[in-house]
Length: 296
Image (cartoon, rainbow, N blue to C red; front, top):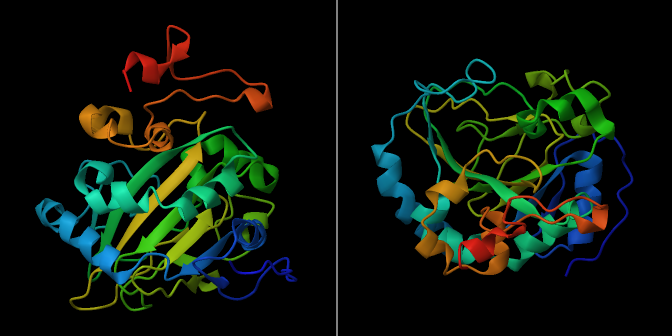
């Protein structure tokens, strides 16, 4: 495991730091708390990325680009030439059996989210493919899914993290995600920054851009003629917030029964407890864990 080191700069003025995939969760948390994110190099193997892409390719080919039936938080948020695929747990064996069950992922999520709540859930797992000519995404913070946290600003809890996984190499030309390191500490979260403030997260396939809910970021402009930038944004959030994706209603129960209890919790098939924070039990049936009702 990589040794923890002291991070000296409180408000960074350069691109996000990069650490090896086996960096300790404590070091990762230290960097994320300071910068708002970190790049985890070679987190998933090229073979895992290849198999994942092969599994979701048929479903991606059936999608139409653009957001005709979606309501954008900001104009252009979804992208005019961007495809977005959800329900990845069901569609990809590699994701549900290897990636989401990766003990490094769960250890990092534990480190960042358990101080806030006793358990957490996967709020979304979304493949995002930015096509040629797609303009840069408006800058935003992921916690804006729950607007009260935007209003509370930097002193609020960090309630969500995003393991943005590169499914191809990210370059400035093909739409690498843009980030503003240190924007998690800005006093006014209505201020999302300007494109000139951003740095591109240049990634190799299999690298992970791990960001918290407080950092301003957005997908970059794809300036190529024929290249597609594909990534998977999969996010965890504390258990007492409503998830972006309704996994409990779209993932087949027979598939859920093959997964470990912690993964069932991530998908909303087990109740949420918050006893260490003197909070109540949520998402239950007859005052018992929903897993009993579902016979898990």
